[in-house]
Image (tube, rainbow, N blue to C red; front, side, top):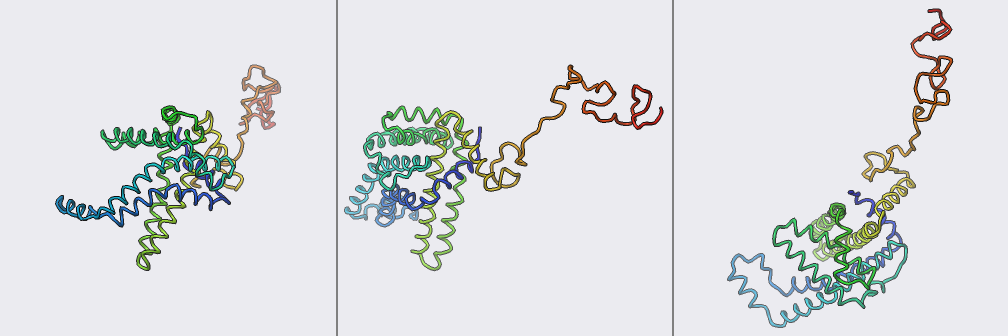
Length: 324
């Protein structure tokens, strides 16, 4: 069953209302090690994509000072150690946020005790996805979708083993890969918006363009984290998707947008937001226990109406009162 991304995005938006500041801080610091590593690479390392030959690339790398290599190694090591733990803590914060509980900024470090498990989990995920990607790109994408819920399982239950978290993720995503892929793709517009901001503002100020682009991406990260947490809460329990759909429908109806066609919202049930009434022919006829439509004993139809077309009655008169 494929579920519209709006089901999870609308729930995420409602959960983040009034809590955007903490959500942005948690998302920012969860990605801070990776951001610092990218910053070191951009400022200390040569851009090899602009070099046309292997000899030029080799010469550019040899010209890098040893201190920069040490700085790059330190940033890479911190990213490797801290990112899994912060990611699991970030997942736990958004899981509780989606359930209506606000942990505050300390929620980011609430899973520091399972940093070893988190590191091993991310390493196994990386190895599995890489091995599948050696075949083709598509198997790699499928593998990434298959194991995408494992960090959420570990965040929700730190007592789980790494292999158990991977197994649970594989089971819950067996028929939900397309739904999760659609949810991820639906956020591409945010990336395009960030690129557009950077392009338009770069003519005024490069720094302003970068700040605006990073802010848009940060908002997208918080929004995406909340939506993914909502997706996990739906697929990790039996009947969770149906409950999420029903909740989205109730919210749409509460704001006067109850599933009408063309609204760009998921449509569930009747489009006109009305309940179906049973047809009169579906109810048993007290005058005709056999349920036939031969009419009552006085020559009328099942509903007591006059026969159509002037059909003759048993008393010899036609249906319109005239003699035949």
